[in-house]
Image (cartoon, rainbow, N blue to C red; front, side, top):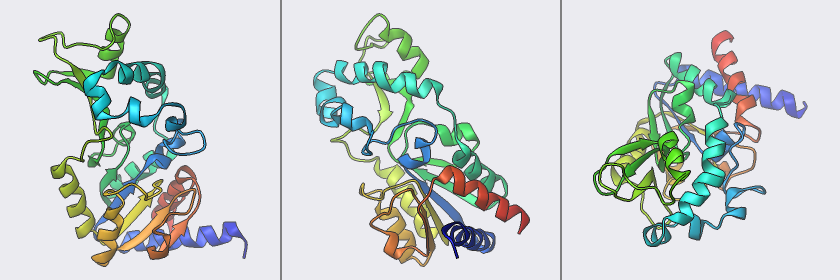
Length: 256
C-alpha cells in the first residue's frame, strides 16, 4: 500500500471517529495559516529569522521604545495581514462546525483567519493583532486605523488621550491571559476528540492542551507537515498540509 492510500485510510478513520464523537475540539498553530501566505515564526523562512523577537516582540523593549514594534508592524506585519485570506484548512474547520461536529477552535494564531472563514467559537491563546487598544483609556482601533496613523507618526498615539497604543497580543515576556488559558484547558479536558492542526507542539503551556485531552481519555489526531514531540501519544498522525487534509476529512464526513 502506497503513502497516498495509507493517508486516505487514516483520513477515513479520523472522519469516522469525528462522526461518533460527542465533543470535538480543534487546536491550531502557525502551520494552519502558513498556507494563507503567513510565514511561520520558527521555520526555514520564519519571521524571527529576520526580526529578532527579543527586540521586536518583547514587552520590555515595547515598554521602553514601542517604535521597534511599530516599524516591524508597518514593514512586515500589516502588509501581509492586509492581503491574506483564509485557506481551505480554515474553511474546512468552519464547515465541520457548521455540520454540528466541532465545538471550539483553540488557536495559537493571532491573525483572525478562523473567524474570517466562519468559525464562531474561537479561543485565541496569544490574542489578536487585528485589535489595537490604548494602554491608558482602552479605546480600541482597527489595524487599518493604526496603519493610517503610522504614515505620519511612529509610535502611534491615542486620538482621545494621547496614550500609548499596543496590539491585543501576548508579547514575549508576558504570560498568557489566565482566564483564556483556563477556558482552553476546560475545553480540552471535556472533549472526546482533539484535532491538532498545524502546530509543532513545542510552545508551552499551549502544548499542554493536547496532553490534557489525552489524559482525560480523548482521541488525539495530529495533522502537521513535520513530526511533533507528541506524535507518540497520538491515535492518528498525518504529516501533510492541513489545507489538503482537512477538506478531505469534510468530504468523508459528508459522504461516507
